[in-house]
Image (cartoon, rainbow, N blue to C red; front, top):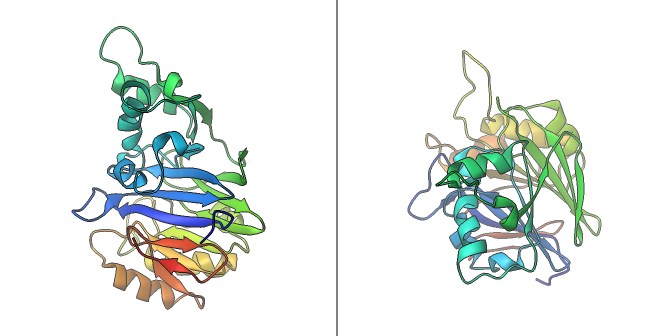
Amino acid sequence: MTSDLLRLTVLGSATPYASVDNACSGYLVSGGGTHVWVDAGSGTLAQLQRHVRLDEVDAIWISHLHADHSADLLTAYYAALFADIRLAAPIPLYGPPGIADRLAHFLTNSTTRSPVERAFAVHELSDGHQARVGALTMTSRAVAHGIPAFAVRIEAEGRSLVYSGDTAPCTSLTELAEGCDVLLCEAESAQAPTEGEQVHHTPEDTGDTAGAARAGRLIVTHVGRFLTPQQAVARASARFDGPVDHAAPGTTFSVGQATTTGR
């Protein structure tokens, strides 16, 4: 692999808490020498350092503020300001509205608000938000998770990766993923709820979303504790004709190509 390829490296895909060998949700997306840390679930900062230092990350993108997608922002804050990291400037942080105050409320230990903006240059997401980070273009759409939550399409050199974040099946995700090379889609639920709001995909939903979007490849992630990855892949494959993989921790996928490597 070269730095010119758009690549997805799985830092972790566990939910709702890390397992012995799998951190929570987090991914490193790289291309053209640009590195974006996508979701920062617990345990992912440690895995990130297998590939890049924190001061080599060009931006951080957070889908929503549940801890299994954002908790390592807290330790990243300490790393950025109080350890051996020397930032040339605060790291651009793209996340749901209120993300800066949410971090500050947790980190503040006195009457003085913690200076989260010294570590992170915060940009609040909105439906349709677009950002250019180095060689990568990121487009975010609001999705259906019961709280403010977003999916993202990351593009470079004609290649495209879409990450669902956490969401029920919804039109905005299908539209965002239209014709993408790779759809990285959650499959948390063993079955859809019989009562109440649906806030996650089942594996069948994941396959249906990939098919409706005409994705080139489906990678199933965020598989719930009542499913095995093998079950999730098999059930998604029954609804999607293209290749289906699992986001196993440590795996790197080349977007737009068939190449896959392990840790």
